[in-house]
Length: 437
Image 1 (cartoon, one colour):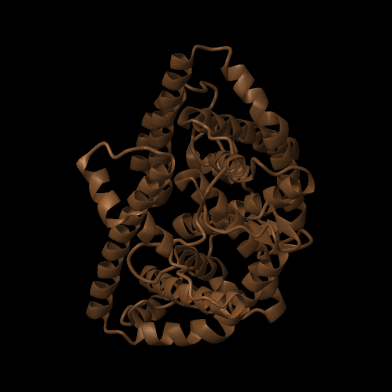
Image 2 (cartoon, rainbow, N blue to C red):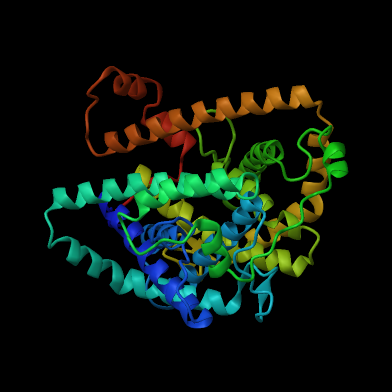
């Protein structure tokens, strides 16, 4: 698997963000018969295009043909779906609405857009990335790195300013306009012809933007007395731990039934926790919470597609970071690169139905019965424990991989890891882990 340097990933991000901005601006210009800036930030960048391109390049670089198209469509659609929800939550607005399109889901995503994203991702990963790297090779590498770091710094400033200005819109117009004039001086250095203020630009770019309904104060007062009410931060964190434990338990029992042996399925060195399952439970709850009462077939379909895409990305990530393959489905029919297979994708779909229809309601009720102060203390203690657990696991795995390549310990920390997390112990914790070829 090809590893890309940080500056190559940054180049892909900015190139795709700019090209996405050009594409969105051109489309809006044709529809509205006048120029509009389609980016979230004042500068000429649509950051969701950049994020998606990096995600597709890193996660799907080894795929070709129909699989590259399909997974590009899935990942890009998920990014658009998450982006739409985040924008609505942060700014209480919708900046696009597919409600009039066929095959849409609450106006956030639609089938036509997903097909377009799939085709765009296919072209970018297959040909576009190579072209960008060839163009980059024409410039001195040091110059490229400096330019990318400068652009990154300006983008950070631009994003922060855009967020602050948009959040403050309507509260103090004069102060908002003064702040916008200051940030516009910076962004004009990149594109001196971008001169519209952020709020006006957004109204032009997204004529369908609509204010979303905010919960009534009375309801807010009622839920504020309940710990981890609704789909709150504390609820998601505790569900992560529940999912991590239940996932590890499920896989352990499954291995016992199918393989006849008790086998560790933990992702970390301390305790029976599967990070893959924990994150899956947390993400699916956050993403599908508003759809939890939909039909079983809807939840099954969403769980199958999202679970398969998620498992594939986890497989690529762990191989890139730790140099290990933690699962391989090459011997199972209908697999894709040994990373996922059709049967286990269906398991993800079944898990989504079981989770929302059976487990989530009960776990949610139990969590909400915890006293407010006790619940917060427990949650943050678990977060601290898991952060330390993950850091220790990462160090042990990296050292495990290095030992397998014949690299000797070079400092006290590595010697300590070799003593306390030797090959025998690591093999017990990660029995299926093999060195990536």
